[in-house]
Image (cartoon, one colour):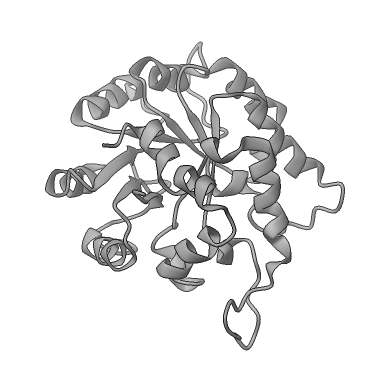
Length: 261
């Protein structure tokens, strides 16, 4: 079963260079990875350099400056260079007459859209309208739709319910990451899994809403190094799902969405 890591960051000026990621992938048996551009960074040259050097292992999700008057043209240029997707914030809107111009351009180019944003923006009626309007490409909610961290919301968890209700749109997908992102760490750490696993309900709710064929795993490397580490970020979620579901969550879904070989 090929394993695809759908959420990695690399940079020569922040985090780690691509060689560190490839080391972790080799160590853990990860076949391919999707490089997701860091928020606030619209210079995608290093990502493309990495992909040119490792075309069989890496794909790239780019960012464009949505405030640029030529943002649509710039996105088309990046698609021509081989971008596999674009990263937009849930609240991204374009200047001018059509606030969804950049979203529509991604749709026209056939670029999957990886969506960042806090839970409030993803649960908002405004984003629900975007999801209903942009139907021609996959839209991927990062970090469990940003309900990955406890935020003080109490039962019945209305915000979480509204995020997971976006699964009614068949072109929406959701990313899961390491358990260290959703489960607090026990101190001192105790084996075999030094986490309080009560928040695994989040995984089960995401699974119930989206199903394995619209879920994909991403390590969130290298921030994951400050949590449970790369290997555990893969192994512990794998242990939560059946082998049959894992074929989709840890590889096949991403291969289909991003057109990976």
